[in-house]
Length: 320
Ligand code: UVW
Image (cartoon, rainbow, N blue to C red; front, top):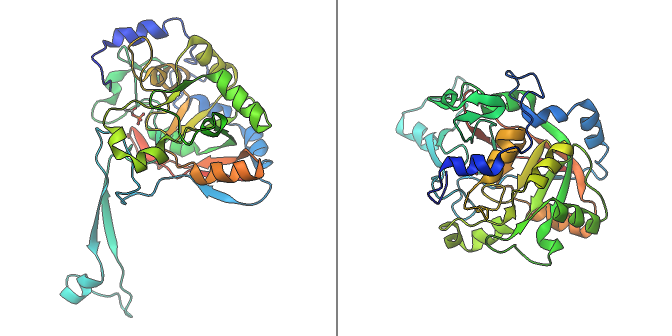
């Protein structure tokens, strides 16, 4: 999954002696990782953030080429009508007794080809996935840490929007532009609130909206985003961050200064069990938060219960 020919050992050596949550929740059986932070107290805290009864649906529309974005190695979803009004005209379908007719369709897609939640076993290095399980468990289907345990649990937590683009007075961050946990804290303070233990971090860079207008940008993947440091990884662990949501393809600055790509997939997903939801559409939510200055909300997302899958399309909801 790297753009450059960097041996995996470079990633292992970058992350060596960094923080880990392996064994924190019933190793080797735990497959929910940092979602374990989202206990009933966190759900009640999330519910208390609902002040206005307004809902923002954060998935990008699918099967609309002008609105879809995805990693350049993935293909757009293919939607196919297998039954429609014409089927009854042609006689390939018959109405039900009494006259009811209906339409049916199928979809073929990359499960990461729209706004999606990654399974904890989606990315690894050193032949080992989340909680120290062998990467061979991904062969054929994910026998460990697939999307299913996350979907069985559901995701409900206290969300905070961190609008890094507005914080830096830009429509979008630049290609490769980075920020860290200190920037997140400053952004929150600037917005008039803090980041609290167990918060679901929803970070807007403006990148997805920019890429829709400039699709050629996706060719040389060089996304802006969080960048790995040991301090950043410790902060995620110490703050009990359960879920990271962004409006970028991979939830992190593509390139780390060491030459490694996608370092946070290793440091946060594989090592800490932080759940990634990527490619969220945050424009309407962010505009609303900028207007009413309420940057906190109930965040909920329900990945599909696809047994053995590496991820699932997801339509997260922010309820203010
Ligand atoms: C990659 O980073 C390649 O995958 P995802 O964005 O789904 O985590």
